[in-house]
Picture 1 (tube, rainbow, N blue to C red):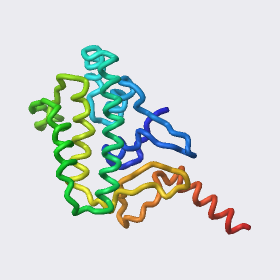
Picture 2: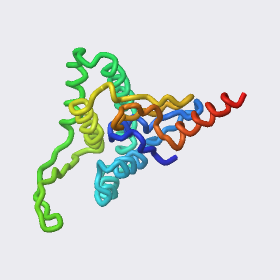
Picture 3: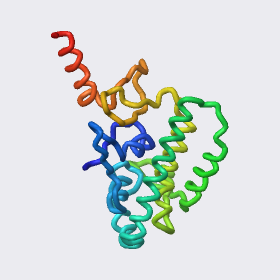
Length: 195
């Protein structure tokens, strides 16, 4: 199954790598290869670097990193649920763990010419497959630092388990996707009115 990118933020999309439409669980980062593919699809890892990292670390190490990513995803889901309910609570132990994940990445900055202008880009490097977990961890850190916890929502669709960041102007978004869950809710409401 292809990963879904409906969350409006890479950290939320990371949570949505496991979901259960109609109660049937789906895991999109089941192994190391799928994890690297998700990092590329999410824009967190350069597509040209993915094959090099796969060859360098090997399937077993990437599978171990994917297993740790799945555990971290559930840890992050629990933290975000708690943060939504109590934004001002003390999360020092969780911050410490997130900082340990962030510290796995080693990198530098590079000056890049971009259409006649220059820009400074962060250039990550990884000394192990487990260091790849720093990429979604950085997105989680950005979400916690820059977003309003009240705008992190779970889809209101029946049996939908997806999350999203409500970036709409009115902040009234209810569904992960207007085309999927939103449409099903409209059809159900129409049928109810017809009865």
